[in-house]
Every structure is written in C-alpha cells, then in structure tokens.
Length: 308
Image (cartoon, rainbow, N blue to C red):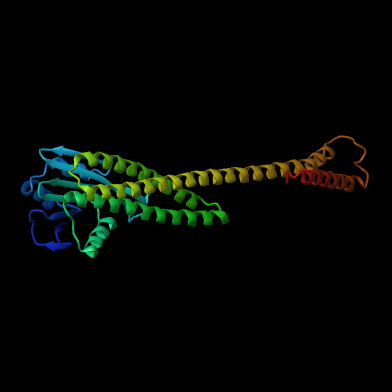
C-alpha cells in the first residue's frame, strides 16, 4: 500500500507523487515493488534488504541513493515465543525523493503520522523527517517497555501464589523480547552516531539528534534494568523450585525411614523360627505395641530435627 504525503505545510495526502513528497509504503505488494524499481528507479536490492526481518540497523549509499535501515519495536498479534520484537524500517532518499518502506503494519508509523498532523508544521527537509523518525522510534521503545513491565508484574503476582510453568514460560519469552530490544537499540544508537557525519545537518537537526540520543540512551538503560530484574526473578524462582523439591524429597525420605521400623519388626517376628512367642497370647500384641512405640519414637525425633 502506497500513501503520498505532502510534508511542507502540515501533513496531508496527495493523489500522486510530487517532488519533495514523502512516499509511505506499508506491506508492499508486487505492484508497489515494481513502482519503486521502475518508476522511481530504486536499486532492487534495497527492497529485498528491507524485507529481511533480521537485517541490522545500518546505512548504505549506491549511485546517490541513501538507504537507512532503522530497527523499530513491533508487537506480534498472534501468539508467539516472542510477543515483542523488532523489525526493519527502510528509509530511502535521493534528491527530492523520500520513501519509507515497512513490511508490517505498525502502531509506531500510524502514531508518527497522527502526531505530525496534529503539529501541523510538516518537516523542514528530508533530514529533519529522518531524525524525527528516530525520535519516534525511541519513544515507542519506551512505550513497549512499560507494557513489558506490566506483564512482568502480573506474572510475578501470579507466581507469588503458585509457581506454574505457564508464568515461567511467559517470563522467559519476555526475556527474549528484551534481548531483541537492547540489541536493536544499540544498533540504532551506532547508526545515529554515523549519520551525524553523513547527512547534511543544521543547528535544528543537531538539537534533534541530541534529543534522540537522550531518548535512545534512556530506552537502552531501561531495557537493561528490566533484563536484570528478569534474570534475578528467574534465578529466584529456580531456587524456590529447587528448595521445594528438596523439602519434598526430605519428607518422603523421612516417611520411608519411619515406615521401615514396623516393617522390620513384623518381618523379624514373622520368620519361621523359634522365638518363644509362638504360643504366647501376648505375642502379637507385644509385636504391635513395639512397632507403634518405635515408630512414634523416631517420629518425635525427626520432628525435633525438623526433618519432617
């Protein structure tokens, strides 16, 4: 799907491409790809690089065309091992041509357009828009991190009542998401530091870059904090599981030992040997009392030692 935006005086859609407009391509079809390659003459491998979900944050220059790949946060609508992940957003520019390509429909891009329409100012130039996309990306990382924090708290509250595999797996998946986040944020920070020397920036762009750097640094530090919290939480629950397992095994062992004594006494008196109690009326009651007495004695001893 292609959308043409006039960004000079506010954000408004136009019917066809005009010099200086922003071409937003979302979930590109074959028709969109042919248009970009045939009409706008974009290098074909740019489109395939952007389609690679594992493509790192980087920039590339080919025959005057500049490709910038930014890693942005993304929430998978369907159930997945990693509910929060990152995807590439491609920014392609040359002269009066500015194109963004993303193979997924994202809340971030919808929010970016909506916010710029509310501002009603548009963009000074393509470079201004690029760094505003960087800023929006950093802000959305922080938003997704808040959602992850809420999920972590809910899982911990549930685990406080009962340790279940479902909650532990949920925490593990969030841990994977944080790994993707911190890797992508670091890549975006490295990309930002390189673009400062590759793009023609003015004083306003320099201020914007500083703001983006602050937001990116905050997102990275927040991600590291949540990752450390998850690591300590998982270690704590692993220790709890091991401790509970040790307690159960200790109790079962103690019970087996206690039950061994009446079994031993019954076995001794039940042997086919002469022991003087075969014809005595008090033989069976004596064996029974002896079994109960020995069992109670060891039961009290084990309780005093807190083994059961």
